[in-house]
Length: 99
Image (cartoon, rainbow, N blue to C red; front, side, top):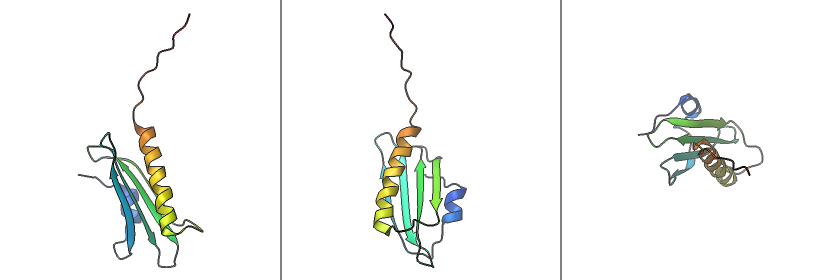
């Protein structure tokens, strides 16, 4: 079960039509990207990245994506969500070898 953070709840408006992309990555991380048109015609976007257990790792919202259609904003947001998810994965220690 996904646990939404404050960013999502401040962005959320169920009266506005939106499109979204949901994806579970190989490691179980879940991404949720939503775009919509505001009442004034601005393209708005929400990006959420959630740990496999459902806790939010990263949430961000954009009030406006000037010059972007919903389709273009959604594609950009999915790429950003995947990058954020990849950066959030703990890195293994690397050992340097010296001669």
